[in-house]
Image (cartoon, rainbow, N blue to C red; front, side):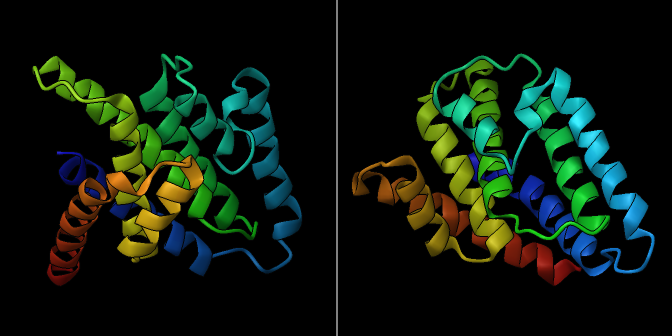
Length: 180
């Protein structure tokens, strides 16, 4: 279920990040646009520090079981901020933001599954979400598995569920690419 629900989100994020990088400001407008984008980020971060940085704070908050009552909105805003910064001239990657958005998406799916009677460990849901999101945005499912296990310090015993989720996500991504 996590692969079915998180993969489309990752595809949208990957599309937007790629588009932002291709249309990155490189002319004189960067002198006002990039500071303005960072001003927007700073203004939001005053009230919501979770938006600071590349996503590490968001991921750490979720992994340490901190409650984020506005999580769906926080994930959407984080994705938009990454797009805004990349589009207006900032350079950087999408690895850590993808990891954080995947953890958040996996956690949300886990909560939604609980509502319909399917109970799953939130930590496993976050790990699966991170693996699916990373595998989709990086187009490297095996690397996503290794990174997810390495970033979270998990044992290799979780490899089979991660391989299944990453494999299903890969199939979904390939089918989506064929339709485009």
